[in-house]
Length: 99
Image 1 (cartoon, rainbow, N blue to C red):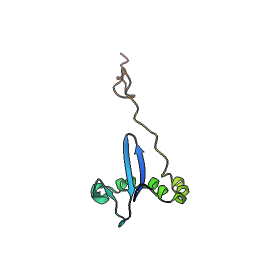
Image 2 (cartoon, rainbow, N blue to C red; image 1 turned 45 degrees about the horizontal axis):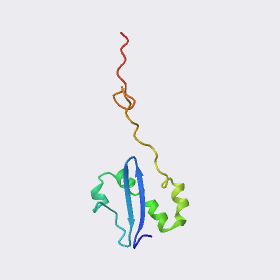
Image 3 (cartoon, helix red, strand yellow; image 1 turned 45 degrees about the vertical axis):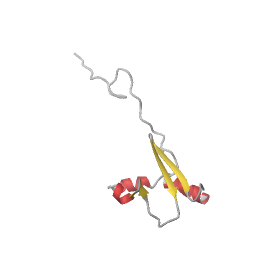
Image 4 (cartoon, helix red, strand yellow; image 1 turned 180 degrees about the vertical axis):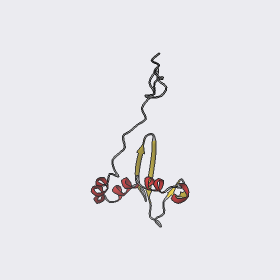
């Protein structure tokens, strides 16, 4: 616990999501806006709640087993593949001409 809140971090590619659990009414806000206003689709609302699991573990360590079994604590290690010399993109080559 840091001060009067619990903290958790979620990362994906180069993005970082920081979650602060504070005593209150149970509202989710992203950049000062309600979640429903910030994200139009339901899938976005579900994804934004995943970094919350690390803050919940800091709040109550007994939840770690259930959250890790659900796969909410593992970091997605996939990164963008770098562009190689002589190619258009990371894997896209020039079109082969037989004749």
